[in-house]
Amino acid sequence: MQATAVAQPNIALIKYWGKRDLPRNLPAVGSISITLSDLYTEVAVDLMPELPADTLLVNGTEAPSMLARISACLDRVLGAQRPRAAVSSTSNFPIAAGLASSASAFAATTVAAAAAAKLPLTTAELSRLAGAASGSAARSLFGGFAELSNAGDTIEVRPLRDIESWPLEVVVAITETGSKSTSSTKAMEISRLTSPFYDSWLQQQEHDLDIARAAIEQCDFAGLANIAEHNCLKMHSVMWASRPPMVYWNTTTMRCLQTVRRLQGEGCNVFFTIDAGPQVKAVCLPGEVERVRRALADTAGVQAIMTSSLGQAARVVARRDD
Ligand code: 2P0
Image (tube, rainbow, N blue to C red; front, side):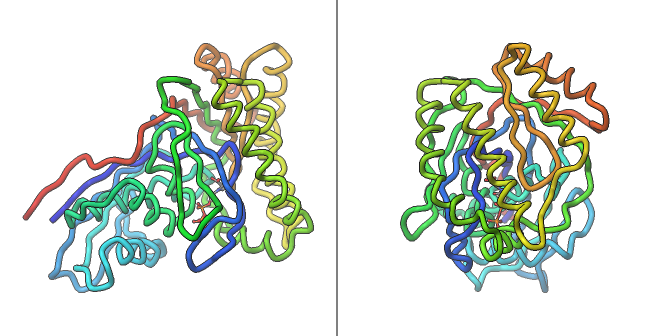
């Protein structure tokens, strides 16, 4: 039995950084994200009882270092007595580089595994299973704007707004394609244990979520821009003040921020956000994409540009019974 699923990465506008329950992967703060349409991960899960062990191909190459996390994800979806699986994952963007590849990879793996085994799971159940593998993956089970809650004993995501009713665009400036040195899971724990700003980060998050939710409801671009940039810089301040410090930015990251500031000064409706990596995501209104794309492409050190509209929820694209 085999199934293939596609999921898109999502970009947090109000960030998830910190866990309140490590074994269950429950987030310490709520977060709000947008799912992207033009970046994707496609995962095929082939359940093969005759296989002695799971196998994993990432972009056509064996990836033993990522296998344990994928196997644990399959165990959660299918149970520990499941057949072994051949898993193959393909992404059209750099992985493990701060572009939310774990979100799209674990969302697609969860959906493909459930479909291969014909499990009739709801979106909420699939989202919980994906979120247990990687917190941000829970949000990729939804299209458009989604909020991951930090309340309750389970991982809960709810859609806030669909993609047609406020069609924002995202321009991604890739400043470095190598993998990051510290995984998000580890980095979040370092922040929790050592950052002097961690407690105030937790305390202020509800306020930031309230403002962002209201801005999204009212299609208030300036309001969303203001709180999203503030929340992003606050998360990076938590990281920078951790011990050891975690500075994911490079010189080009900073130059891209200056480009966005210049565009804003010229009246362009754009704002930046940066995740656990050096890439800069510029969120803008549809009419501004070409201007933002050109300005970031002309910024010294930018290696590549990707543009994207808001995307759909993770979904099954093929199924086969052997
Ligand atoms: C986010 N990030 O909200 C934040 C912003 C990175 C910075 O979620 O440990 O890979 O697997 O639950 O989801 C990246 O963390 O972490 C992340 P785990 P995940 O998008």
